[in-house]
Image (tube, rainbow, N blue to C red; front, side):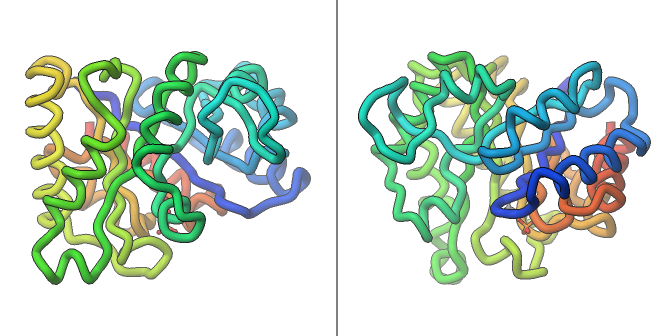
Length: 252
Ligand code: PGA
């Protein structure tokens, strides 16, 4: 039985005061006991101060990015050891904005995954096709390549969560239909089985991301291979984030 994970990717939003207000709103709302894992991923500068706000709650803290070295002369970068020390249990790697806006390629992501896991930070690894790739019927080939370029049998599958995020659905208001999401999630789970075996693939959580909102979360979460959501825009308000957490709890 996979416990759903609902992760809020704050992206480059919120000052410390705004972040504190958002966390207070989430804490004040109803987070169903133990049924869903809830994660917030604020910008780097908010991680440590917000970790103290989350003490004593079940809400976990994650980062949106990491560098592929533990320490050294890498001006402007943040290492997974620093994320761990700031209270992070997860880091998002391979988000489409990092791939497409910042130009991150498979080789770098491969290294990031391993160095994050070595530092004790679990990985949410994102993959997904562009609209052009979908229309050219290349969705499976694209996500398969993204999977194999960064993950493999040297990676502990119990410490990895996949997030299928079709690029055309991120921040656009377009959402994959439950059927479209389910098809890719089932494909990814089969791929995971080929690498890690049945038990690991049965336990692997695969999140959907891309314009998940309070009103479409329930239909996505009922898909057998959708195990939660990576939420952008709708995580910036406590009310809509909590509604998605609630939908995940109801799907269990
Ligand atoms: P969105 O972002 O919910 O605003 O589409 C999702 C993501 O980029 O993780």
